[in-house]
Image 1 (tube, one colour):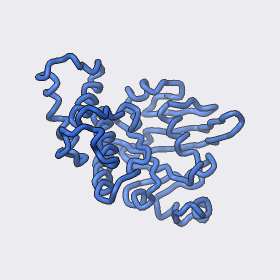
Image 2: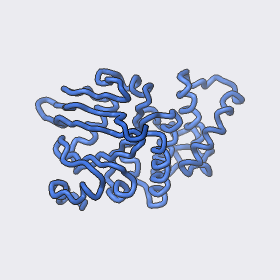
Image 3: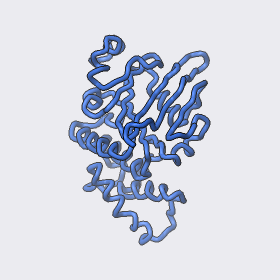
Image 4: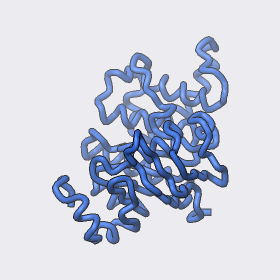
Length: 251
């Protein structure tokens, strides 16, 4: 049900040679919501994402996803449970077409190999779903263009499409709006909002206007610790949050 906790951390801590990058972070992410992780540079956001997606192991603490203790699991194992980071599987093949990139992600979802040797007829059976995903992210007119020829913002849209092709229960999106113009931002914001109708989204995002308009809840990190949590109105009015952002160009 919407609102129950799908991901939580307990005392999540990561140290590097005596430097504490993340200290005793206790997150609670509600199911089918859009939750943002924000903070000034060096706040520990990327380290938290690396811990949640299992590219780093915590020094101490626990990570529980959908009732499973995933603290000791490998990245592929948590992905199979439905917790997928945007770049984790969605690496774009630059010299394949946009359509072929999404089709490969759909093949991967079946749990087998990429099936490069299968007949064209068998592979084209995935085209209908692939084209729907491309339409969702505004890439339908670019289906037959090589991925390498896409502008940066469109490549990010393609990465999201290939991630969604895996039908994850929860998406970790690392700065999904980075490098995008207003039109692309509006399109991807609408897509993320529609995805959260039956999925959970946790995103790191520096564009605070996006966070304000899109996210149900926000966690603010500073120096590896949770500084504040709540909706945008609550955290933006917090004096400690304003002080943490002082001089970073954000209000």
